[in-house]
Structures are given as structure tokens and as C-alpha cells.
Length: 262
Image (tube, rainbow, N blue to C red; front, side, top):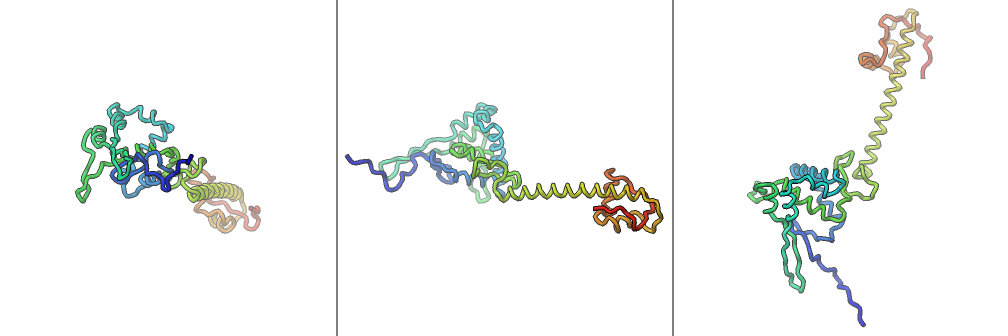
């Protein structure tokens, strides 16, 4: 008995989305198919669509994601419109098979938004208003089996991204992660340096205020000459902020017999 022979070329998908801007296979969407959705979330060319789409994704993420929870607060009319958003269209092919296209029902979108959902572009062609277009893209996004691998916004650059590994939850790339880590380390180092400088300045001021022998130098000249890592300007700034004691204006230090300081 002969075995069934698989076709040399895979079958085209039987069911697909038809959104007017391209057709997407239903049930055969890959992780890579989330990339165009990310591009819209990070777009600089369509700011209105980007903003509305980000609002939807944020609500989706904060729900768990849990679509039932996310939709529970919607008005019943809007929810019913989403349930009926796609209209099936049977389409025969030149072979023995047919295909089923799911097209967005503009009447349902108009019902959802309570009025016209199209506006004219400069060339006169109609285009969906950003609010309606965002919902259309979002609904298709939730049908991708990899949709929960969307993450963001990145803690450094603010972009959304598709996770390359399950532990990737904060940064969109190693580049952003490394840059953010470098910034944190730099801030920590500067904070530590500042603390050391304040401590050194405080110690120097106490020594200056305790000196009684005559000298031709005032405290600013003394600091510049004997404590080069602490400028008089630094001292004045933090004295005014009550972080350092005030140097005595008429103290007279004994030159050459200062306590050695690291």
C-alpha cells in the first residue's frame, strides 16, 4: 500500500486576514510577524497612532495580560463591536481549494466610535482615524500566538520590543542594558566622589577654624594651596546649603605645619 505523499510546496494558508495593507496568515503567524507591530509602537512618523496603540498595549500589559479583565470595563456596545469586527469572505482559487479572508467591518468600527472613522489624507484618499486604526492593529496582534512575548517600553530608550529570551524584561537590547548599567555605575562613582569631597572639605574647614597662628593667607587661598581637591567655590556652595560648616573669615593658619591629609 502506497503512503500519502506530501506536496513539494506547502499549502497556502486557508484562512488569512485582509486588512487592505497586506494579508496575514491566521494560525501561521510567527514571532517575526510581531516586528511590524513594534515598529508602529515605536514610530516617529505616526505619532497619533503610536500614542493610541501604546495606551492599548499598556492596558493589556497591566491587566496581566488578561484580555477578559482588560475588556471587562468596556461599554457593552463597544465590546459587541469588537466581537463582530471581522467579516469572513469566501474566495475560490484557480485550483480545487478556496480561501477564507477575514476583513475588518467598517460598520462595526463606526458603531464602536459612534461616527465616521475615516478622514482624508492630503492626496484625497481616505484613512482610518488613529483611534480606530490602533484598535484594528491591536486586535490582530492579540491573535498572534507569540503576542505575550512583546515587552517594553525599554527602561533606557523607551521602545517596545519582542523578547529574545524569557528573562529579557527591562531592556530592548544588550546595548541599552550595558549603557544603562554604565550610567548607574557612573552615578554611583560620582556620588561616592562627592561624599568623599564633602568629608575632606569638612575636615579641612575644622582644621582651618582651629588654627590660631598668624598668616598672610585667607581661607580661600589656604584651600587652593593646601587642599587642591576642594575648591573655595565648592566650599561656598555647600556651606550655603548647610552641608558644611562655615570657615572663619579671620582665622590665621600656621603655614608648613598642616596635618597631612590623603
